[in-house]
Image 1 (tube, rainbow, N blue to C red):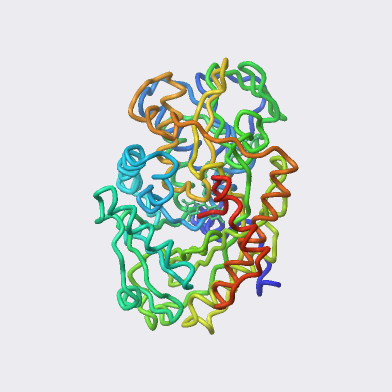
Image 2 (cartoon, rainbow, N blue to C red):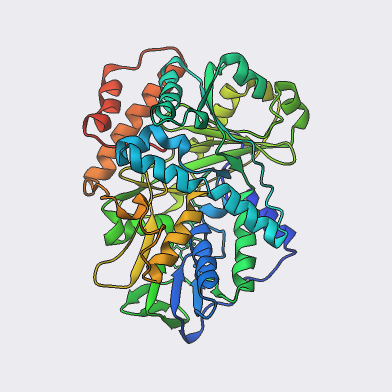
Length: 469
Ligand SMILES: Cc1cc2nc3c(=O)[nH]c(=O)nc-3n(C[C@H](O)[C@H](O)[C@H](O)COP(=O)(O)OP(=O)(O)OC[C@H]3O[C@@H](n4cnc5c(N)ncnc54)[C@H](O)[C@@H]3O)c2cc1C
């Protein structure tokens, strides 16, 4: 299967954001010896929010951020731009955390959208924030259960207003497609243009007095020394905010693997959006395990994503996460099936990136025992919003604080371990193929072969989560 446009980098979002900066030069690489109170590795949302939170809490702190490429080159400049907390995930977080902590987490995460809004407004940055909520739609009979579970989960914890059931007609009033059977509306949801957000954060961090070195990959950390090709940074507190790269780092790798996620972006088609009534700006996901996610842009394009990309092996982040044509083709097939009203609208761009998937599909944050190296990863395809929490948590860990952030279950829970390699890659790959075969058959109204159904059921039988939902 081939997409009409091969995936490539940089992502359109980042390209647009860089163009709006008028060709600003990257920050200079680290050269020679430097010292800081806190070193942050990684210039995506997590590292940048951490840097801001640290300077906000203690303006005298010397904070230095080291980024291998340029800020936003990773998934923070490539994602779908769905910005939300944890109400939409309640059906699964109840099982992982129990009701009390699942609600506590969802309530803490309600601060994310207002927090991002306040950041952008405070700095006069236009990140194209659109607070229109999020829909999950059922696009096959087998997906009805995902919608129903989301509605039931919110009702069971006394918060039915956070997941409101929508009939076929009510869904169609927001976005008309013959494929949509029914849905659920989450008010906790917004979209941003990801490249604009990450570059706005970079500007804010530099203005806040953080030293930023780009094109500065950290190749070794020993004690308080971070080695890079051009110099060494010495810092008593170190924050690792390198996302998918942490799947190769022992303290995190036991509970972390990577999956590819790919998107296609259409040419502008505001009339076609008008015709299907999708003008309200809602972010939409379907009810698959390897879900489709889709949204509109400010100039009337549609972005369609598919979380069905390749599974990683032993922490390697290679071209399979950015150049995999078949996954981009699946995203495009999703666009055509889910939104037939856009049939004549060409795809202009495609790109992909790695998703750091944790064993229980929630991010985890901690400090490597016996060190002052703090880390966070495992957003599981859902980090645009939660990285705002992550920055606060990592700042608290670096400051050795015991506070509302470090007491969140994202820090305190026990994260299950995944099977070791190569079992993880081989087993995960087989189960992934089985789930994809089942979901494709369900969409075509067929019953999947028995072997595929058995393989797809395996993770649940073993009490594990798989996929990117
Ligand atoms: C295609 C796609 C679509 C997605 N859609 C959504 C969505 O709609 N909503 C959502 O919530 N989430 C989405 N995600 C996930 C989201 O993008 C991530 O969870 C989020 O960007 C993580 O931010 P981060 O800062 O932790 O990681 P990153 O953005 O990956 O930043 C980590 C940085 O660390 C740098 N780095 C790595 N190793 C080193 C080193 N050794 N030295 C120095 N620097 C290093 C990298 O270059 C990178 O810039 C999507 C992801 C992808 C790939």
